[in-house]
Image (cartoon, rainbow, N blue to C red; front, top):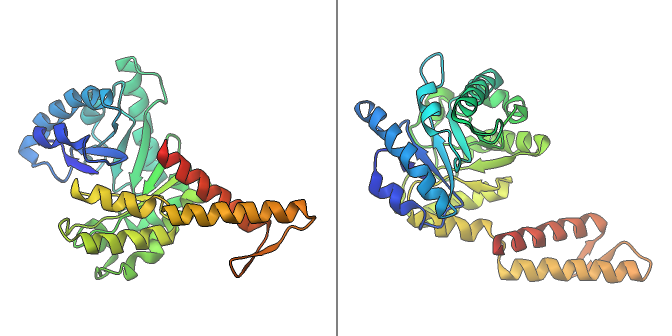
Length: 284
């Protein structure tokens, strides 16, 4: 969940929203005149959020040539899980940010490599090189989000639609790059934050494309998205039954069996075990 870095009250409340992670934003949601004050505020809130167990990221600013070292130096500290990079144009930008992080970690006495990087791919070249970005040092996830009238729409020249038709190829590239590199794909982003039905439909599309989660902008959106990405009780029962049916078939010397009208074999059982494990991880 993105949280404006210049709004102390929002930061104080964000840990109760139920989001898996929060992104304290120093970039687009903060007016230029407030950047320095927001940087100081965010730096002072990271430890407070860490004490609640809230996973915390910070989206930093960038100029034409460089990600803000002032931002990085201010926020690097224990309790910060990672930084979010806006508009990296390729793996070179990610490598530059990684070098700045390493320098800040050394200066601040933070173990080198402890803070991750999540690039938000918002340029055509960055998307074309999604796999290379995903492979870059420190990268733990990629954000492949399409926001109405925002940077990516302008760069790609497409028209935004609620069914995400125009961005499905882009999002699939991000999913494939992350899966190939062993990283986490994150989708989004629904700007009409009070239209929860629209949010639900948009997040369902992200899940169907293989995203492991989605970015949100408002606390009311967290419960909707969590419900969509968390396997339901019916799903869990279905997959547990599939595992049991396959195990029984194996005991009888077969690797395939009919289960609820479908032919399943070892590959399907492996998928079922993955789904059950995911459900159990949510419970933890």
